Amino acid sequence: MELTELINSVHAIQVAGDIQQKDVSSVCYDSRKVKQNTMFVAVKGFNTDGHKFILDAINRGAIAIILEDNKSIPDDIFIHEKVAKILVADSRKALAEVSGAFYKFPSQKIKLIGITGTNGKTTTSYFIKSILENAGEKTGLIGTIANYIGDKEIKSSLTTPESNDLNELFFEMYNEGCGYTVMEVSSHSLVLNRVYGLNFNSAVFTNITSDHLDFHNTFENYFSAKKILFDSLGSSSFAVYNSDDKNGKEIIRDSKANFISYGTATNSDFILKDIKYDLTGTTFTVEHKAVTFPVSTSLIGQFNAYNACAAFAVCFVSGIKQENIIDGIKNTKQVPGRFEVIGIGKKKVVVDYSHTADSLEKALLAVKDIVKDSAQVYTVFGCGGNRDKTKRPVMGKIASELSDFVVITSDNPRFENPLTIIEDIKAGIAKDNFKVVENREEAIVYAIKNSEDNAVILVAGKGHENYQEINGIRNHFSDREVAEKYLPIGRQASAHES
Image 1 (spheres, rainbow, N blue to C red):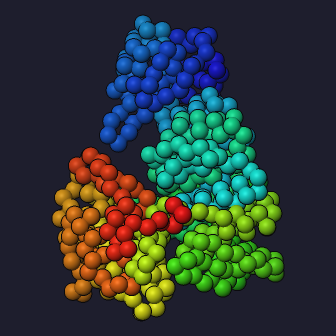
Image 2: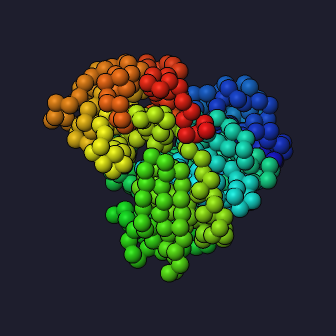
């Protein structure tokens, strides 16, 4: 695309230097990826500032620089090197604008469904993708576990990638025939303008509880971040929200979209009823305009009934036939690390990503509801380092009160001392029903070997993750693999392998 056309896509404060009649070969924010005729966007990050690498980008062949710090480099350098300088108020917004233009605004060519909330984003996205594919629609997915273009998996490092990477993904998805894309939209991505300017056909709100306060500082800021998605919707879009969440109506309050509610409340557009579940799956009904639809899924728990109902609602208003929706939910495979039951003998291990107080409580309540006091409930969990510290004692209290026994261990300590994190967790525990085993593998083994033969052991916090991060180094570690290795029955196929 021609440089002048790209410059016109950005809200620039000043344009200086050499505006050459050249085609831009790429747009990037990492100077190491700059090649000849690249447009480089200098973004201020948390660990480093892209403005420090402007000269490196120019030396590598950049012909245009977008920046927000006007003092970062003298104008003489742009003139001498014959490079265009584009000064903007916000480099992150500019990156979103220019990458959208460079990739020909791909989010306008596909039907984009965004999902936000504290819990349930990943599972809801899997339900929606399964429904759409059951209806014959090739579908892209962007999320925590992996990104997909149809059946082709692309590894994911961020729940929501940077805007430039997103637009490139959408461009590839469109070119490979995807009519829909489903994506998780994190609070970080909304604040950092990673999804700025995208055209969402629908947005789903699952729920909201306290999380990511290390980044947002207050719950109000966290909520405001989530609300950005709904405030950005146009009048032809759908805002699908959980009417049972006390913040549901508030999050859509200023949206121009068409409101669609789901939940157990009788005034919901899609009413969730008759939820039943055990260790083999979940059944429920959805009532819409006095018509009742029976639904079943192999995914377990009341929270998964909510996730499936959200998927039902957004796909229904998107024009998908009810039979495709019901079959799509039924055919949704086990989401790795999301209430994943391991073992075919009496003793079960449930591996779950529950890493917030609310999700841990819901997972434990689901386990207790299934066992009905007929079996021991063990919980193995820790908390991540360099993250929200306020949830640690709360999670300790929940685990202790809802479990027969708790094994407190290490999660991803990152750059924190694991024992310091454990002490924070212990501060919330009043009962004498716990043991500290810092080594996570040893903690899981302890729970398996010391629990009764018919016990259910919840291993919480890491879910699908196959690593443990200690002092900046990621070592291979999988809760599922450890559970399969040490269960008394030996290694058995887990739900998502069978």
